[in-house]
Amino acid sequence: MKRRFWKISIGVFVALLVAALWCWFFPQQVLTVDSGHVKADVIVVLGGTTDRPHRVAELFKAGEAPKIICSGAGDADGFKRVLIKDGVPAQNILLETRSRTTRENAKLTVPLLRQLHAKRVIVVTSWYHSRRGLHCFEHYASDIKFYSRPSYFGYRRADWKRTGVLRYIRDEYWKLPGYWLRYGICPI
Image (cartoon, rainbow, N blue to C red; front, side):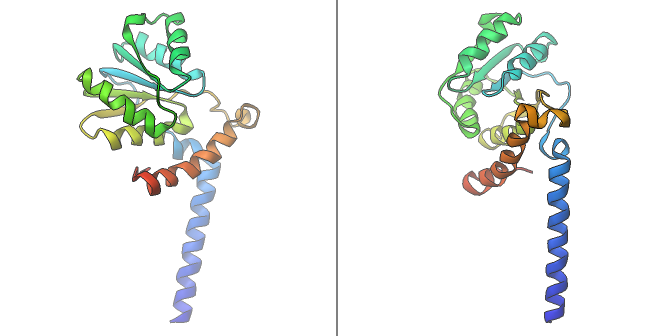
């Protein structure tokens, strides 16, 4: 009985170690969710790094969605200015300016999406944040179909330390289970 317990314990430990190493060395494959080219009713861009609104402008110009919601206290107004500078008409941009977390982005943006009668929505955030961002929106609005189209700033491993992306990757691995335990938002 004792011997079997130790075999199982060692097997579980090895499996967890292999999973942890996989997550550390291949974070793009674990953290990134990219739905590919889709047509939607609205694009939601989450506050954060400044590459995000440029990605949204690309998607808007490609005809992926006619409306944009910039979500995030302190970022939404600046993102709107970037979008306008990148050629997006101001009348196509709405703002959600109260959210301070990814969870709040979803909770506070979903009512705006419902007002717009949105059925298909693209969520834009950084690649390392795309899994949690997408699942937060799915958690709070299961009646709406969400897609992820992340920006890829800092995607090259050589840039991670210089740009601070390595810290964001590490933090994301803590936040995924944290959101699951605290809010019931499953990362899978």
